[in-house]
Image (cartoon, rainbow, N blue to C red; front, side, top):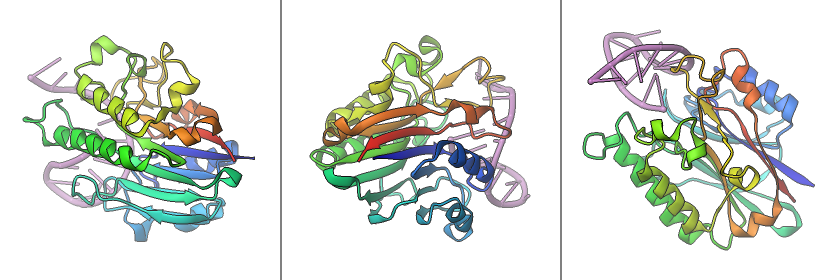
Length: 268
DNA sequence: ATGGTTGATCGTCAA
């Protein structure tokens, strides 16, 4: 038996319902971790997702920006969230899944701040917020991720390795790929003794992307991508990792999200 | 130094 868990920044759940339905029909995920739902909880299309089979739902949204959700075919044993950087801006949710004979799996869904236009703490508060958020995640992972069967997924808004962007030299001073961010991401992995699931299945010398921007003309056709979406597995979960797939096909569908689904399969 | 596009909302802001 196995569990198919997906992370997807949908860039508005209401604009992407058809894509979610098509993706679910073709890839048969068990759990969806969504980011940038961009909707208040009372307006979340809960019944549409229940009709797709995701009858177990945890939703944390707000007006216009951010917002996360975990939608599951299987029941949760528990659900939780944390406030990061003292801002309740709807960037995190967690649930505990049954996980089979090896014990429950704690699943965390994150939407890390994008970081604004300039990679400078002094000139740009949003970049400071992003660095602080990543540091807080590392401190949390050191005490919380170790010794637990834990999977952390989400839009972390950092492409930490050279082959996580289409042109390392050109983009190394761009927010999302600066050494300041990459170091903090490495610290998060070290702190939690976490495996980078993407790079566990695709070696670091090969390009791997999950995001193709809207602004750059023909970014998909030219493959001007970044790996901003991640799955990180704790040590007790390492041997249960079966498969990882970046579902690039959705980016070519009509009116797509700029992010594509990241699918992780776990043996249960 | 700045553009380019999309979404929420309805003039901008965020990404």
